[in-house]
Length: 408
Image (tube, rainbow, N blue to C red; front, side):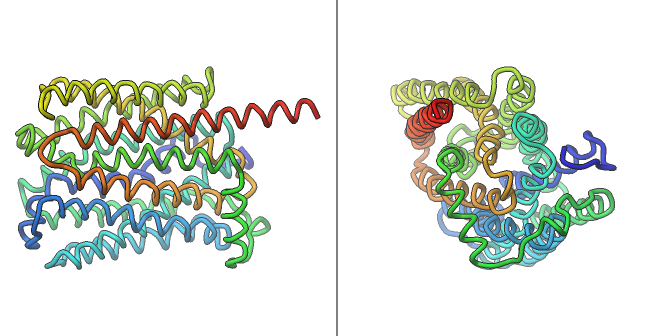
């Protein structure tokens, strides 16, 4: 820690997790309502409902590149204040939407606002921790972040039982307001005025240039984007796969939650493993497992005409998402590790670039949905393969750099 804090470790992790989880909540609680929203807004084509998920991430990708440098100028707290306010405005717009365009604008604003809680939170954590300690904190936060998707669809389904889909966005508004109050009252500013820099395009350009030219940060950012692209493809088509292809009905929220628990359990386990084995070793094993398991399961699904037994799909999903739980926190921590001196803009570039990479990949996987799981598993197979190749390249580059420093 760089400075003492009145907030305990447990409260700090809880508050950071809640801020980060706003994105997961606003994504997954909407999934059970996509059909009703599509019907009420007269959306043609069930695959077009996926845009309600994708536009949230589009807003987030744009917002992250703004909030990072903004937080370096006006501080972490004020930046999060602005973001939550924009998120609330987006919720209001979605509540009163009567057509797809208005809904998508509202969702874009929600993503634009939620970007502050994701990216500035990462910088705030980097202000206090570094290296394996940061990876440990990120793993605890990711545990809560992934636990939210485990219960968010059930939460959305529960809301639909007593009211219409608009109430889901009302709940987002209330949660954001309460989080705003907690953050304002308890969390101190971690970036002192003496460490702030003027907001300028030149500063942003320098930060982007330094991040992109740093081979370690840039490589792990690309890998994170590729892996999250596969996961976004799953999020976009999950409702169709479970309810349309496998006919799970309302039990969709249960099965979706079970797979999310796999990610959360892995993230919690990673908090212990990373202190003993390191981020790179764990990440390498996880990427290898995702690629190998996805390749084998694609062949198995192909033999069964794209719809293998449901239990096998759940087993594959749990195994793959468990590996992803080992990856998410580590990849972000490895990308941020050399960027401590520019934590704000560094976090912005890492988050924004990885999200921009993931969006077209996720949309592409979702658009290929045709009633089977083949497009999804193929996406995990191909993207896992490319991510693994890049990971090996990044690891070899780091080893060469270490050898050069030792020899000099």
